[in-house]
Length: 111
Length: 115
Image 1: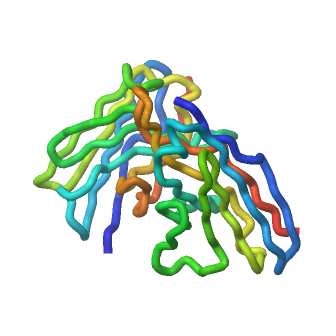
Image 2: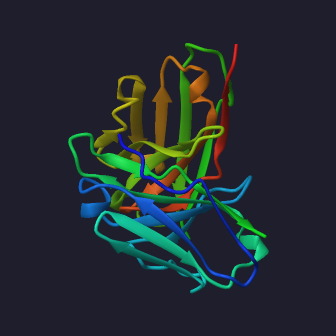
Image 3: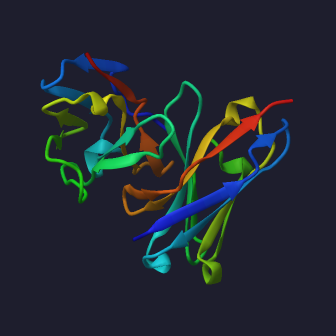
């Protein structure tokens, strides 16, 4: 199964905006919804975005998602030190080897 | 509120079988697929398998030959067996609810494979 492509790391100062990209193909992102997860050390993954751009209850609107073609983007505005975490995109593979797939993860550092 | 509580052995030797279970409270158990996801040291998230209340399964092709997922709907539980474990199977294993994405997660089980 393919792994979606994310930058290994991004960084920005508190209060600033950061974007994290997620690149796939027509058999995954191109034909399926994208979700985003936040991983903090010692805690279970938290769903931030589903269906490309929807936020679950309790997720602040500082987090937003978008998708275009075979790529997706997570944007975080008004960065806080508590946002420092690993972020993963996820979707489904519609090819013969169908199943869930994730990106390699992006480490966000809030400088 | 949906809650997932998981358990299983945390220390295994190479060639042994990893066995994990997950109990679901709250929500409609039979309406969803239920997944297993792992995070290996220095690696990202990896989807392992999913199962529904009828026992319909989908497996990660790279692990399929070693995987068996099962479900006990009467207990609202689902389980995972991974045979012939190797060092690279070390990681944190999570159970999660699948709805096209993973919205509820278990607390995670650290599994270490070491001789």
